[in-house]
Amino acid sequence: MPIDADRAIAAEPRSTEIAWDHKDVQLYHLGVGAGANPDRDDPATDPDELRYTLESRLHVLPSFATVAGAGMGVVGGLSTPGIEVNLAHVLHGGQAIELHRPIPVKGTAVSTSRVAAVYDKGKAAVLVLRTEAADDDGPLWTSDAQIFVRGEGGWGGDRGPSTRREPPSREPDRTVERVVRPDQALLYRLSGDWNPLHADPEFAKLAGFDRPILHGLCTYGITLKAVVDTVLGGDVARVRSYGTRFAGVVFPGETLRIRMWQEDGRVQVSVSAVERDDAPVLADTVVEHS
Image (cartoon, rainbow, N blue to C red):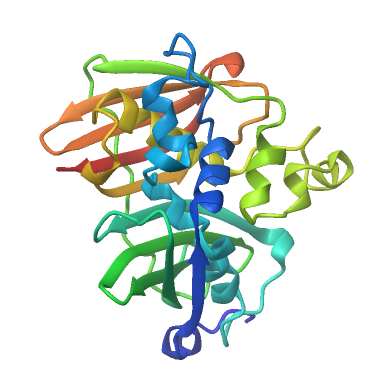
């Protein structure tokens, strides 16, 4: 079996030093739609948007943790001893981050990655790749990527916990729409995810799509920014954790419909593609906040 769960979990964690500055943060923010908020009269110069784009006012959207250091934690996890998989069978099934404190605009940290769990889903295996980042002042964030590997299940292992969460039966408290620009994937990939699936039409066809698709983590960032701007008063420091399941693809040029249900200390979210009859995009999505 290409995946040896016991060996992968027992493998020594891999650590590497990562660094970022305001240019990396600004590029990421632009990649998830900063400066193009349709709720603003002039989004490129609106003070609330300048917090994402102007270095003198900059704060860091917590989902930046998924690309800091070019997201090498996931890459390192897939090369862990005990894991030999065909990358064509790999899907990013879900993502969660826990923030231990606000991410600085400029920083250097040690990023440590390991396989935290391997689950047997029958027709697929699920790898939980955990990345923990810390600087001289202590922990910054913990990031869990849930990676589906098709065709690698069925060995009788632990199926893992269920994370399915139905939206509340009432109407959402807030609903916003965000247009994905035609060039969004081309811009977002400059933050480190160079998979040609998001840029090369011929490669996309080989993967079963008629055109390139948007990065799931780009949708992830667009959604968190919408929640921060709409419900949390634009204060990124209020975010404590953020998790989602990737339920469907997004094509550049489409419109995301982001529904939010506010509860005590958390926002439950669902995201769909407007032009495809509200086809699900993100599900089981929760932002916990102060």
